[in-house]
Every structure is written in structure tokens, then in C-alpha cells.
Amino acid sequence: MPLKVAFQMDPIHAVDIEADSSFRLAEEAQARGHMLFFYTPDHLAYQNGRVTARGHGLTVRREQGNHADLGPAEEVDLGQFDVVWLRQDPPFDMGYITTTHLLDHIHPATLVVNDPFWVRNYPEKLLVLQFPGLIPPTTIARDLSTLKAFKDEHGDMILKPLYGNGGAGVFRLDPNDRNLSTLHELFTGMSREPLIAQKFLPEVGNGDKRIILVDGTPVGAINRVPQPGEVRSNMHVGGKAVKSALTEREREICDTIGPTLREKGQIFVGIDVIGDYLTEINVTSPTGIQELERFDGTNVAALIWEAIEARRAG
Image (cartoon, rainbow, N blue to C red; front, side):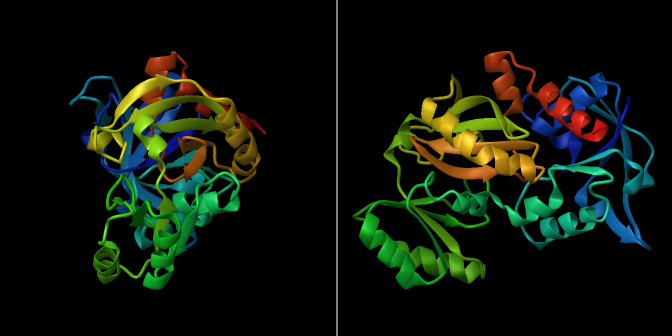
């Protein structure tokens, strides 16, 4: 049966239709006969017991610059929808967190993907702490002496904001680096949040694997290779996506975390693996669908919608 589907996301006219996963999900939903509605997070509201959104009916097409037709502005009751996609990009700040609290009021009668309660409680760099046997040596702290002790122990480390995204604010501090105190002063002057330190993994030079899981099951992977001299492999800072297959270790990682993701309603997840280590579990607005589809010929968006349709039917 056709579903009423709302996308809570960033402005759709600005997306790159050759790379954006939200666009691909909307395109596949439309092909399956579902009705689409689009709104931005600033137009989500709670009014007299209802969760509402002001947005537009949506039609998409694969034509850059002319890829989205919006209907007249209207206010809708999201409790009358079958599916709401929580797809705005981080930062994972109080604005983002507030949208998850509001969407809690309609889920699961309206299926919110991913489950907003667990998106809120499982941010990317914190969920991995539940799997200490899979991650590199890691410390989360605001206290400078704790971070210094970590660097003294491991020598070569990565330091980044705990709730950062897209590779912003990621620094490598090698054994000869003397900038930890300066960076700590910079970060703590801008935010009250802790920092995350991880042992530097030289295998990042061979790539940072993005593995996509659908309802806890891996469906494929791409390898993101950083530019020479760069520790960040994010594609928008110059990382190159290349075709990749899952290793035995990566399947072990997926088998370990998959049941938790499935139980907590995290239908579309992208995990990051460097060498033998899990570094992030991306549940807020994961990407990589289109790159994987081009490399493997797998209709990942269809697999995601099949999982959603199965949950709705159940």
C-alpha cells in the first residue's frame, strides 16, 4: 500500500542529487508509489497535543537544478503520516536533540526512521563505547590532564570535538606535537562539551571504510581514501570513494553491533572502520547509498524501504 512519507531534512533544492542519500531515499519512495512531503527542522512544532510541520508536497526527479517540485505551503499533522524520516545533517546540538523529543510523541504509531529516542541516546561517537572490544584506545574528557595522560601513553593520537561532524575540527597530534594545550584551550573556549581522543591508526592511509547496515544487516561497503598527507577521509574534504568488499573482521564487527541496531530501531546506519577497528556508528544522517549503488549495483534504497515497509506491515 502507498505510504504517506515526510522528510525532515535540510533544504532539498541545495542537495547534490548524485551523492545525497536523502534524495535517493525520496526517489525510491516515489518509485514505489509513496506520497512525499518535505519540511525543514525549523518548521517542526508541538501544538495542543499534536506534532505538526509546515512544508510542501514533494515530487523529485533526477535532473540537477530541477530535481524537486514543491507544492503549496501547508501545515500537516505528522501523526497522520505513516513514516517520518529524521534526515537533517548534524551538528548534534540542542536544536537537533529537541526535534527528537518532539518526534518521540508520534513514534511508533508513525514510524520515525531512525527511532528518535535512540538517535538521541546513541550519538555517533558515544554508541561505539558499548563495544570496547571493537574500538581503538579511546578517551572522552574535558580535563586537560586526562588528555595529556592519554597522549603520554599512546604518543600518536587524534583529537576532535565529541559532537563534531564531517571531519571538522579533527587534529592529529603525533609524538613530537606540542599543541595539545593550545587545542584544548581553543576547543574549551568555544564549547562546554568534552573532547574525544583516539589512538592514531596508520591504516587510515589505506582508507576509512564506510559500511552500510540495513536493519542491522550489512549490505555493502565503500572505502574512502584520504588525500596524501591528510588524516580525514570525508569525501567533502577530498577523500576518494573506491569500491570495496567486507573483510572477515568487518563482518565480525557487523555481527556484534547488528542486533543492538535492529532492536533500537536504527534501520539505516553507516559505520566507519579503520583497519580492524570500529571508529563511529552513524545514526543521525548517514550517507553513502549512491556511491555503494554505483559500485555494487545493489539497490540499497530499495532494501531500506523494504525494511520500513515490513515494519509498517508488522
